[in-house]
Amino acid sequence: MPTLRISAGNVTATAELADSPIAQLLWDALPIDGRANRWGDEIYFSIPVDADEKPDARAEVEVGTIAFWPPGNAFCIFWGPTPASRGQQPMAASPVNVLGKVEGDATQFGRVSSGVRVQLERA
Image 1 (cartoon, rainbow, N blue to C red):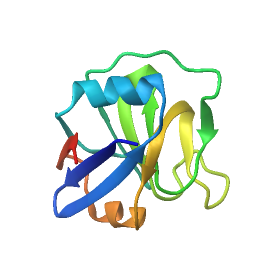
Image 2 (cartoon, one colour; image 1 turned 90 degrees about the horizontal axis):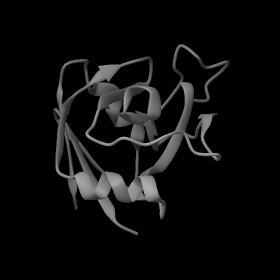
Image 3 (cartoon, rainbow, N blue to C red; image 1 turned 90 degrees about the vertical axis):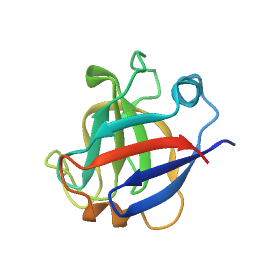
């Protein structure tokens, strides 16, 4: 599986991409720069990828999930509860297409503030 490097402020992590058409669209669009938006324990930002919600899209995801949110053409990183959560489980605002998973401790993204530059590139 391809590996993505995510750099946001002083946080750097890698993520393994899923074998899916949307993950391939992301891979083909790299490198990508954006500015983090925080929504609870989630970072998201618009990316130059356009895809519809897939049949296996879901709102409830695991800690460390990276995903594509179709309504905002946004890349998302989840590491804890969001305003939509009903407990400690990450919950997107609406269904997302899962792209893969952060390797290691995804909670380190809690140190990233809104407005911080985020870079996605091939590892």
